Image 1 (cartoon, helix red, strand yellow):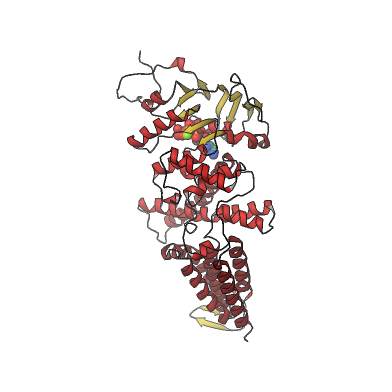
Image 2 (cartoon, chains in turn red, brown):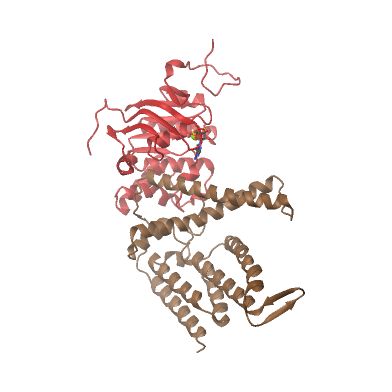
Length: 245
Length: 250
Ligand SMILES: Nc1ncnc2c1ncn2[C@@H]1O[C@H](COP(=O)(O)OP(=O)(O)OP(=O)(O)O)[C@@H](O)[C@H]1O
Ligand SMILES: [Mg+2]
């Protein structure tokens, strides 16, 4: 596998248009590049197409037009996607979609096994990843019986066990209490991986990302349009990107 | 995904080689499926109950599954006795009930319950990945394995979504009656059921692909050679032989 240089974006989306049948376009001629070492937050209203954008990047849905380039390679077919998909870790918005094995260990080992690791190596890798996330002792827990927050951390473990080069995190904080949010914060800081993070929580984004983008009319807007507040306040739009004039 | 409630148990059945369990479940259910004598089917039902006990399955979870299945069996009991063309009839008020129809319904019910319980005890006690892995090691083609597994998963997904939807209707004060509102609600439920199950199955498949799934199943479960395997094979062979003997009245 060829190592891409730092200057090639990990993700390059060019003129992406996408819509579900029988509805207007959700993404419209969207252009976006994501480079190594970036930590970007994405804030936009419900239904604006954030999850759809992530699924497009992973090749789970196909754009009507435009091109997806990952690691400098144009993703023209499912076959090519299948080859590089594991290098990007997608944390699903709903952890229930992500966990499907009866026990935590089996679920975390699923990815490493698919990557061709031996049984022993996969188990070691899974245990190590669980330990990093503070989930040692969870190996034999039954996935369906985990709490919402535990499910989310285990889901994170399932993608980290594959050694991704970047993460796509779809609302990782939803349903987490303050303590777990805090834990997630320090996990993200220690991982040292680039990521694109969807969240509606400004405070969380402020401490975990370097830039905050938003979406409007099916396009991504960079953060020069935004002013991030450093003060605590509450008003109707407090959780959405907004300006004070 | 809460589709594998039986897979995480610790009974000795769970530790029997997955391939042996698949073969046993297949042989056992074929025997039951082709049997016709009540003298075979009744012991069959008892053996299946025994298997679920040996696998130490949660009795409540098993009963819930059976109730769902009984719902479909109820349809057969409504249809067959009234429509089956046989020689003997029982007159029940205005209804002519076919005796053969009743017998056939009873056989179908016994077979269905016995076979589904044996599958709960022998197949549902392994994870999807283990099942897929074992099937391909038994020489089943890769494509067929995926097809089988997805169908199998889909059934559980369907059941699961059904419970969620029913709960949703109930918390909003829905009480089934015999009016149009009830029928319409049920029609919506069934429609939603298939849509939701299909969507969830699709999302799980997406999640699998995101984790490098390319059609081959690997598993960390291993089944070291143990006396369990021998015991299990012997037991199942005795059950099978017993049922065949009963069927032929020996
Ligand atoms: N499978 C689907 N079929 C049809 N329309 C869909 C489907 N999935 C999503 N949509 C529509 O696409 C639009 C964008 O959905 P998406 O899930 O990407 O939004 P989002 O920005 O992630 O929202 P949220 O903040 O609520 O998660 C929505 O209007 C939604 O109704
Ligand atoms: Mg979303």
